[in-house]
Image (cartoon, rainbow, N blue to C red; front, side, top):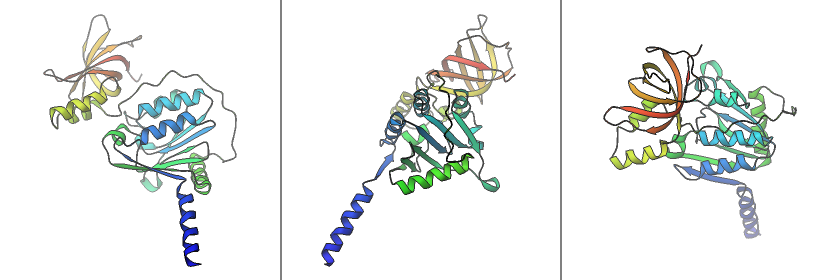
Length: 281
């Protein structure tokens, strides 16, 4: 009788844990699992994240919204204000984005995603490129209904919307998201200044072709207004611009975006194309 009971407990435990998938980073498949979850979602994706700077995940969320999936993001208030955060861009593209602080000066430090109210991702893994490529992180994917229900109730409480709310949202077709690296040029320069040549080259291969955001002072305007140079925290930035520009002058402080095409060499200047400039006015 004892052995039969032991076998029953073992089988029951195996069946329960079959609802859980565990992944580790760096580059252990967590981002692929998240992208798959976003691509397969049919009705809703609810995200609570301390940081959100991953361009790949942002693009997938916009495509999900275009399919009619309701996408909501709950972010930490201070982190959402940083230049590398994707919160303003995602809000502009029509996603439901809210940011809140923690209690008594604390932080909204959650990281979890609920897919279609039936599957939950959680763990130390943050929604950043660093978590995917460089950090040791863990992630769990849960499909236990009681656990999913608790995450769902907590999300609704923090987001400030009753669980029964199911209003239809109009589907707005959005442009494809640009892939932002989630690091400032100062941080990139620091990372490109350490390690072996092989390590620096490998790091740059991950960055090249991705977009960056920042703020800087205009140091040179070219007569045809197709490009300009900036100083961003002592880092030189040359940007090939696209689209109509606001009135600009040398010495003016502006925010910018652009796609990384060349890293600093002797002149210590990053070169970007597809640039845009915002004067904040």
